[in-house]
Amino acid sequence: MHSLKRKFVCGGACLALIALSACATQVAAPPSTNSPMAKGKKPAHPLLSRIIPFTSHPETKAVAPPAPISPSSPPTVPLPVAEKPSSPVLFSSIPDDPSIQLYIDYFQYADHRRFKEWLERSHEYLPYIHQTLREMGLPEDLAYVSLIESGFSARAYSRTGAAGLWQFMRGTGVKYGLKVNWWIDQRRDPILATRSAAQYLKDLHDEFDSWELALAAYNAGEGRVANAVSRAGTKNYWKLRQTREFSSETRNYIPKLIAALTIAKNPAKYGFTDLSYHPAVIVRQKEIHRSVDIRRLARAMNMSVSEFLVYNPQFIRWATPPRLASVTVNVPVELEKGFSKRLASLPSTAINPDVPVYRVESGDSLWSIAHRFHVPLRKLIAANRLSSRHLSLRQKLLIPVTGNSRPVHLASRRSSHHRFSGWIDHRIRRGDSLYLLAHHYRTSVREILAKNHLRSSRILRVGDHIMIPSR
Image (cartoon, rainbow, N blue to C red):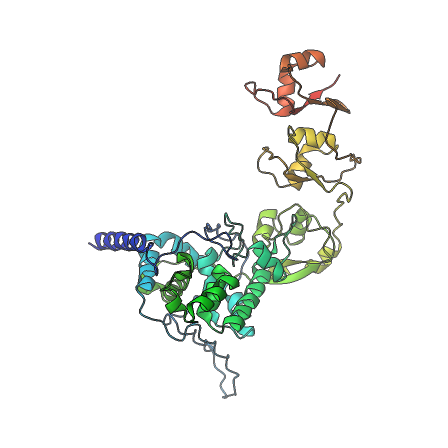
């Protein structure tokens, strides 16, 4: 009977959300590409880390600030205790809007499994997020913006280009001090991105003097909200929801947030009784003033590369950026001892300043690029963290420097082939075939196929480059 009731409610919630999507006040639509934040993220896998346990939230009402935690062992002699300052209230009043209950039903039933994952992951960074918001005098309930933006996943990345816990778009992230380039994406750094998001939210509140409008601007952009207020002649978000000034996504952003934090603060009431919260991640930030290989950094922390990237998802290449004056690295507190000394002993990476990046041309393959620049294929793959041998036109590849590397001109190739030590880089011309090439260069078709990772069924295309062993 309970299962039948749950299915009935789940189906009803989904149908209600679909039916209301056409109305002026209901369910969210796909994100606008002009929004400073974007949706459509998938939650990342739980952190693999050495972490310090953290207790779960006290159960409180949906919009009330969390109650201060009383000490477990009070002193025998009463002493004056400095009370933790109370957090400002996020929403002073919440109307009886049906869309809030619709989202509660949706999270509780239709999206139960995914919302459960979000809740379990929430405790990884909630302590730090709450601390940051407190220090800036902001409502701690703003932490749950990350819940509906990314499911508390630092690795979340949307199809519209938003990234990290707070789903910053590139322009907004750079505006608030985050470095985003070919080497690093600090929107994915949970510590730095949280500080930037808190400052951004504070600036939005200072501009609109309303948390509802500030959050709407976080979703849709300041310009859109300012124009909506000007045209509608009201600064009341709930009245603006009744107009056509907001997209359906922005109209439902606040109800969705209220529903999410309502459940997050009292999950058992809404059927989330089997939660296994992830322990809190507690790190210290260390500055690096030179480019260092990620593998060496990981070893300096006594962890694998995959573990290192769990704490430092902002690094997206094989080394820390070579052209930044400094960059921060997140080090778990339990591994902090001796790290600075080990870091000082690490050698800097040897990145070729003349040929740092190669842009893939038509006909290129990893084999041809590796041999053209006299770089072992495995090092080329590792330097660019390639999981596939497929290359895209105009894709950028870092060319690592090795003992055998020699300067190579990056201009487009014009001759039909280039000769390297033991290899010929041949450009396919009209009439070429593997048999004719093998005969001409006194090798075998099988050897050409093996060296270029080609299948016999591959059709050679004019302009392609293949590597042929020379005799």
